[in-house]
Image (cartoon, rainbow, N blue to C red):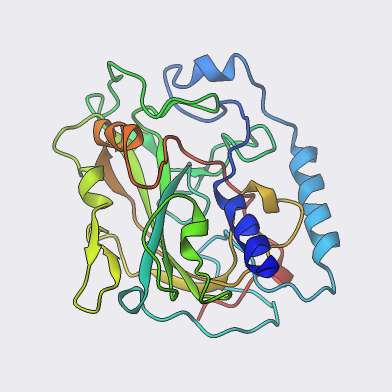
Length: 299
């Protein structure tokens, strides 16, 4: 029982909110309200976190870490574990999102900046120069507003559809992925990056996060896009800024789609107002893992 509780606590680091300021590359003053109150930390702060991560994991047997650049396949981490089954053979246990992408790929490769050094206003973004003025038009109301940030048209989010081999019911926090009957379930995260647009014809976030039971009684997310490229699968870990300076001890199979989809920002706002996961804002991101010793080889 103690092990299960500690595992739940560690998994919850994925969804632990941390105060942060706005910092990034939105045009036309986008995000200035937050930027005015919070300055981004210097490069040496992030460099120090990377140094601490390397020191705290060296020679201690940590497995491959996440997030990563999915276009870079190299990695020399020697810890091996079996890939989780296909998500169709697992049960959806949680859906949450991070403001800015935790992972990096060609379609979301613009660095959002160092942020506050604790996960907020960092990560990677889609190139908003490819969006129209109409898509970037301001919303009438604040979207997923929190002390950390407010979502705006042009923002990028990374959605994590988390699956578990345990017999679970989708619910709040990643503790919903655990079961009293299984202390060490296999975990898989189906990952999709979206760009928020002010367009009622764009994808509906409610439909994107819809779920139900399949014929085998397993919960499945029914709305994950199937036209955003072949998912890049790799062996990694749990994420979240709580692991910026220490290794995550959990093994996770990731499936990250390489292309971005547009979603109607108003529908994201509605989801933040009410959902079974009790999610109401975008979570912070973990620094991109670049140390080859902490990365698996993508096959």
